[in-house]
Image (cartoon, rainbow, N blue to C red; front, side):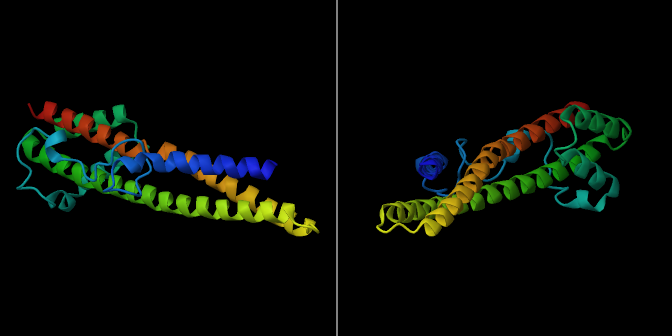
Length: 204
């Protein structure tokens, strides 16, 4: 009975995890309730001067590159990151606009790449979850057949029961992780927007 309840719980979670992407057939593996936006639009987070003339030049500036890495790290609190931006731009008054553009170009590239990596990981896990749900469903049917067999092979029933419990727990743990990680792309968006706003304010 316990195995049957666990298996049904897993299948309900599978339904919940796949319900979101039924609404947008373009992204069948997207497991989050938030709509999938593959890339951050520059226009949505930057109203400053054009970045066309800096492109990848931020990578050639060791100081900017190091700061971009620190600002992009989620372990760096946003308020600390904003403070670091202000300190950096305050110390480069002569070329403030140039440094500001380099800094934001680096943040835009780096955080967009982070975001793509997270989203790709979510979709890989989503595919694994569907496969796991199918396997749990198949083995639940096998277990029911074993439980109703005459004579009943207790060793096989116990072995399959234990395997189903283990697989169901893994499924549920992954589901919890996915729900948490689904928030990360939004957090990245918010960080980029907030830091872009500070950079633009310091340029004025």
